[in-house]
Image 1 (cartoon, rainbow over the protein chains, first blue to last red):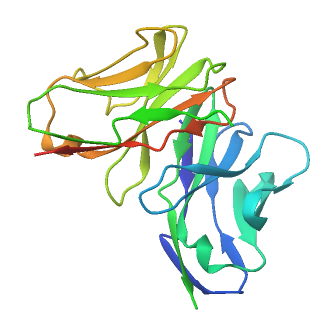
Image 2 (image 1 turned 90 degrees about the horizontal axis):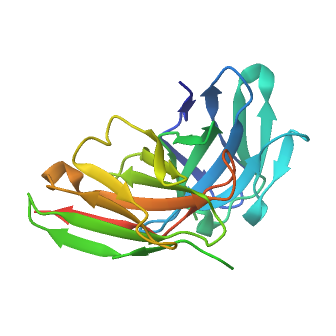
Length: 111
Length: 113
């Protein structure tokens, strides 16, 4: 069965600093990959997705992610973090119509 | 923009009571899902549903849980006899194609006392 690992439970960055959230997956083939964001008390909003093609994908709110097959990774990045980016971020893998989520990384943004 | 809607937004119930959570998926979507998120924990898959039957279910989705699409628009999750540990946020999602992007509702918070 596929699995998703987000090694960092909590990350704190200063506003304006760059950000990278890690995600690794375990699956025999290339799955469909997603990053979702969840603000406190809210639902899940899609940031970006990778199905095929260009391994660097752009998403909303200035986020991007890069799929690296050799590392089974799909890390999320943002060059300059804003205070409003403070939230929980979930990496997800969808194979055979079965989407599974990582444990999430909570992002705190310092002024 | 079409969206997934869920009702109620919050339900408080006594242990042992039946609860039905309702979802209206996006109208042209064919694949439906329920996920659960216990406070402060990860989002956990419960069940997927297609063509009026369950496609997959997790170990969490035991005999106390059931899903139904009673008409052309609603997709419901029933918990027959709630337990304290069922307290969580329950998210409904739908997708147009298998393996595609899931669109999530805002969630229904269930509190079991």
